[in-house]
Length: 429
Image (tube, rainbow, N blue to C red):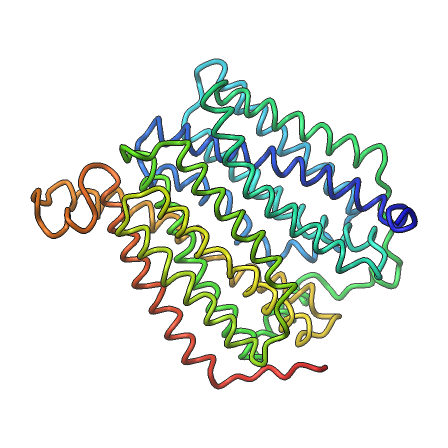
């Protein structure tokens, strides 16, 4: 045990401090969502926060892998963390002087998104370089655990601090976690240098083109990526709708939104445990399709027609518990199918193709709530079929959007399920 801790010492310091910093950042993002919705009452303007964060990721992800290959990983992480902290300080200064406006937040979120885009591949490679190969699986489990705990804790902590001490206190906590992560990386972490042979990469744009060419020639992988792009469209629209669905309700509010959001983290934690217990399936492609059909085809309908926070929590648990199962099977297919020497380039291209629908989904969800469904529900007659289905008052339009997302999410799964039937992934035993 002592030898294992010693071998993983560098990883444990880096993992724990970076996870702490991610928790602080997630808390600030959640609190800013609450603040902006309180200020505007608009689902679309609130969703623009996430759109501005994801847009740089979608646009730059295809190049980020090649960039991180050529630069010092530790310097990239330190630089990106510092830039992101400066953005957070700017929000705090504007807030304390009563100058903070939505457009400030959109701009700063875009800068943060760009920093995350560059930092993520550098951080992933850094983790690989500090983890002994025999501990890859154990380290992967710890990272999955921390991600789940962040999803569980950040809404509860952010909601509590925001309600009792204000947005500025949440930001102070975020800056404190940044300082801890920065100090650990600067003073105690030494990331091994990549050998000259490994740095001998193909030209930048040739690397990008080779990743796209691989996807074009491997239709099973491409179809899976496009399917998950459709899933991400529905899921991100759902994320845009959820605050507008819960916050204005008489039995809703920020505390309930925090509890419902935390259930997603609880579900992913349970799903991660489930993955370790399940035997390898005979058809991993089918598992990916079926798990997403259950998630999208259950959660949206359950929330759309329910009025109880307990049912909203149940919907989140059902919607997220199978996501780790899907991710694990997709990961096996990608890592087993794509040649190791091409994985970095293909993964970068995959990120752009799979995640470009996320900002589109956030915009679509917010637009449908503000401009389509809320006006329809305002004009709906009391005692009519619409109010019977979705209730009345602000938030009922968001419930209608959830029904629409449930229908389209089910359709996406069924259509791609039919396309994926012709593909068979043969796993080496």
